[in-house]
Structures are given as C-alpha cells and as structure tokens.
Image (cartoon, rainbow, N blue to C red):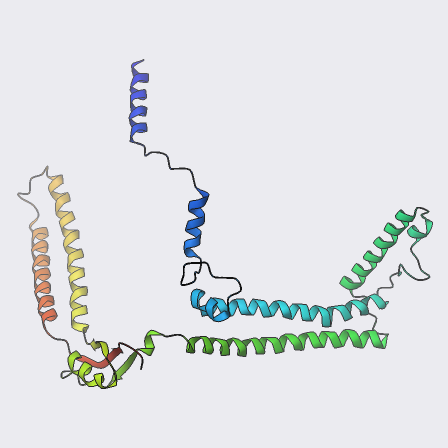
Length: 311
C-alpha cells in the first residue's frame, strides 16, 4: 500500500507539471495563416488568377512567372503534337497490316458479333473487337511499310514531331530570355542606385570626400569603403584559439581539483604554467586587437557609392 501511495503521489506531481493541452485546431486560423503567405494586391486582396504576367512576376518573382509561362506553352505544344502527329500515326496503324490482325469491320466481321442474336450483345461484342484492334495496332505498330502512303505518312509525322520539339526548345529558350530581360528592365534593383569606384589611393580616401565628389551627380545616401582588415581578422582568429585553449585548461584544472577533494594546494606546476602562459597570450592578443581596432585600416582602392534616387 505504501508503494502504491508513493507511485500515485509521483504520478499526480508529474501530471501537475505537464503543460495544459493544446487547443483544438481551428480551420479559420489555418485559412488565415495560409492566406498570409499568398500573393496580395496593394489593397490587401488576393492576387487574381487573371492577372498579367508582370503583376504575377512582381509578387512571386521572375523565375516563377517564366516557369508558369513554360508550362502553359508546353501544354499547347502537346495539343498541337497530338493533332498533327498522333492522329495521322493512328490512322496509318489502323489501315496497315504489319501485324496481320483481323479487322472487325468489312467482310471480316467478328465471329462473336455475327453469332450473337441479341442486338445489344452484338453491339457490345463488335465495339470491344474494334477497341482491341485499335489498341493493339496503335501500341504495337500495325503500320505496313509495303503500303507507300501509310509508310510515308508514318515517317513524315515522326520527322515533323522531332523537328517540332527541337524548334520549340530553341524558341522557348529565346522567348524566356527576352521575357526575363523585359521584366528586369521594368524593375528597380539595388544596383540601379549604386556605383562601384576603383583605383582609389589607400591612405588619402575618406567617405566624406567621396560623398562630396559624387554629390554632383545626385544626392548620395551612403558610401562604403573597402578596407584592408587582414591584420584584424588574424588577431580575431588568434584570440579565438587562445580562448579555446584557456577553456580546455580550465576544465582540466577543475577535474584535477575535484580529484584532490577540492584542495588546490600541491597541483601540478606544469598545468599552472600552461594556464598562466595561455592567459598572458590571451591578454596580449586582446590589447593588440584593441590597438588594431583604433588604428585606421588602409583602403583597398575599392568603394561603393549609393545614391538616394535614380535620376
């Protein structure tokens, strides 16, 4: 009984610490959450499915607009290939005799339809014979090359289909490139507001001087100078190595103290010397890093000038 009581108390305590159950999912909240990620018009309404390509690309990106355009034209290509190529091949396979199939029409009517007296059953048997003949002749290739017209029609449609796909691939590549250039030309980019400057002197270049020089061309929003910070980066990496070494030695020191029962007197002097040396290197590196940060780094001769507006 005592064991059961203890288990019950522990179970009640664990149940009390459990977080409250999550609320039931709401369809309205899920719909609003999904609507947040859908493209919208400036007024807040959802983007219409009948919007233009330029509006669609503005909300979803140029790549998505070009892909949807590619899917649309590919669908029309398959419709055209079906009408121009598949139908003549279907006719050539149906009229050929390469597989020596018995045609269910004409003088060689099917025996099931001829022997059946019921009109509906005769119709079903005849229709099934026709469907099976058309299916076998189309899938297995019933076109006979002894018949000049059927052979030429079959080969001509195959050649036309291959040529059509080659022309389509080249055309869609050129069209997508032209559409991409047209969409990008009507959209402002960050590079439209900025210019790159090269060949600047390393020690006589300031952001104020560049801003004053380029203010003749328009209002300058910001100037970014590229500076040679190799020494600062080297000191940062060195400081990170010393910090990692110091943490490793500190953990080693803590394990040694725990092994001696919390008494630090009489520890290995080699470990203490390593810790002292690492700490001295860390402090020296930190002082050098502060001095490097206060010292003005030379310019690499590169700068970016960003204007407030495009004139």
